Image (tube, rainbow, N blue to C red; front, side, top):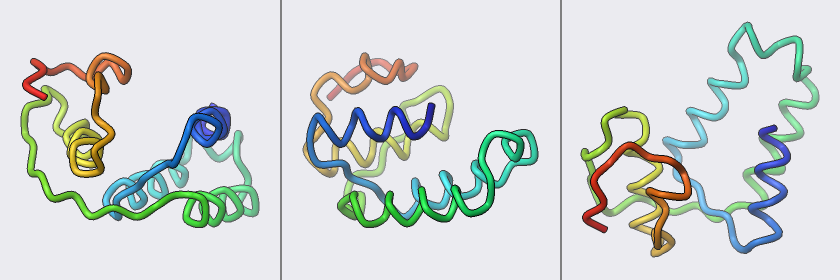
Amino acid sequence: MCRQAFEVGQRKGQLVRSDEIFMELAATLEKPRLQKYIKGEDKVDFLSNFLQLTKSVAPTARITVCRDPKDNMFLELAVSSGRCGNCYQRWGLAITPPF
């Protein structure tokens, strides 16, 4: 699923990432419940490709409107990179859209 979402994003345009999102992705892939789905070498390859194929953007906006605080980092990146549009609807973020 993660790889499929990544490939769809690649086809649709330039993918962006923040350091915070990359660290969250790497930590998530290390969770014990995911170990049966993705092996160590595949994880390293995926994360390496992710770094190479995404543009690093440092969030310039500080946003704290999401009910789930972890969603804020995604919205911050979208707003800071100018790729927000209707991202709150597309991603199903639980916010009131002031953007």
